[in-house]
Length: 245
Image (cartoon, rainbow, N blue to C red; front, side, top):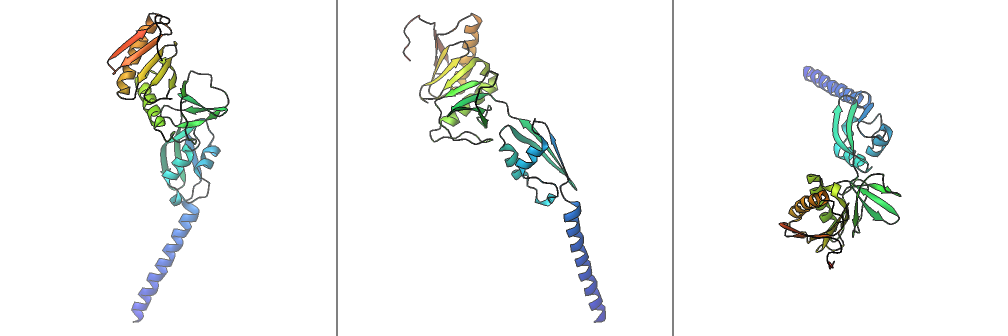
């Protein structure tokens, strides 16, 4: 009986010591001491604050999805890689979002990347060629994909994605989404491109790219380019005839 009591006491003592050790490790060893941010132009303090990171926080309470959401909410950057190096170091790699398009929102311009993700609003257009979007009324928040109730934001995302994939954005000045059944693009050389509806939009954009490149190669500016079923393009020079638009 006495032997069993000693064994029980020893076991309880070991459990208490183990619990104390775990508590000490959690409070004194496995706590966040170093945050390293690679990439992007924002400072560590800004990134850490957005991600809810603070020195002294238990590393066991860190959640990658929460850190990602916090950083992405800044709009300008997004989390590309997350690495926890025990016992006390967190490595974050972030990337800048590249503005590809802009949309008028009140008195400001909303900058968007190629995936229609909101970067942020500015008072003046950046000193670079961006695609201007018209015919969109959307809700947005920094770091989030544009959304609306009519599906035009999703259509815009499809068009921008296809242009980016083909590296054809350099031909486009404006995308008019006012009427999803009568989509229009104005090129940087002033050609009005009539896309029609959204069916076969990727094929239509490929045809537009080829046709506009050929036209610009001949020095053509202005006029109207009609795309028919993504298989044929008809071009009318300026003033050649009256084009009903």
